[in-house]
Amino acid sequence: MTKVKDQIINEKFSLYNADCVSTVASMPDESIDYTIFSPPFSSLYTYSDSINDMGNCRNDDEFYNHFKFLVKELYRTTKAGRLVTFHCMNIPAMKERDGYIGIKDFRGDLIRMFQDCGFIYASEVCIWKDPLIEAVRTKALGLMHKQLCKDSSMCRQGLPDYVVTMRKPGDNKDLISHENGLITYAGEGDLPEGNPSHNTWRKYASPVWMDIRQTHTLNYRVARAGNDERHICPLQLDTIERCMTLWSKPNDVVLSPFAGIGSEIYQAVKMDRYGIGIELKESYYDCAVSNCNDAAGIEDPGFM
Image (cartoon, rainbow, N blue to C red):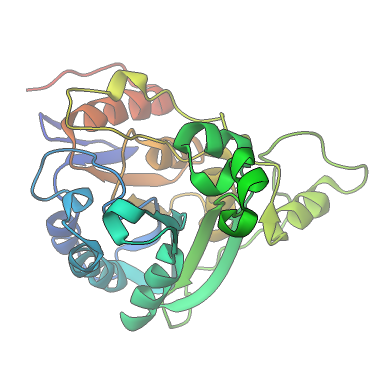
């Protein structure tokens, strides 16, 4: 195992405290079986004070220009016929920042960017979120009951999460088979009576996932550091497990270029995949190392 301050490499996973664009650019062609991540949400949140942080872009155009460098590298490094999944939400437009109140089609812009780089738009699922929780957290005008009473022309629905999957053209030469027909259920509640694998597939094939456990995430509080960060929201482990079940298999190499506190790599290790995670922010990276060590049953090795 290689141990240095800015990287951990062992038989279960590799983690890099680095910029994702340059790190993915150093990877061999068609070396990744599956990629899953949540991108920075344009200029909506500030994650760190690094000039390499895409969340620090001055406007949407600057973000997309920066992000496209990564998408091109993801296309190059993804094996033919294999997939890249990104989790996102549309972005609220704000009067003081955008000049109007509404919604920006972040999801659609990302899809079109991936298509421009050669990917095929393969799959999408909408994840339900409680609009009351969003209203309390964001104070969005369109979700306030008082706005309904005053003038409902400004009311809107809550913003769900989307999980979008893009496929690289070509034949997949290493089949992701479930020959025994068995897939296990990750979600809230019990399955209906009958064939559990069939009923799980019905849940997973649904265009709307209503049963994701919103609080079933890795602990992120220890990753907070300083005043340069205002937002951290780990992807739910149910979502990651479902995606990895559908679009990868044991011993696959799974990449997360925005690893955060390591949720995708943690789940990859738990599911017998080899995870490669890249995270720019040091406090997130340190938390990811701890989480992934836990998943792999490795004691904290320290740093050289």
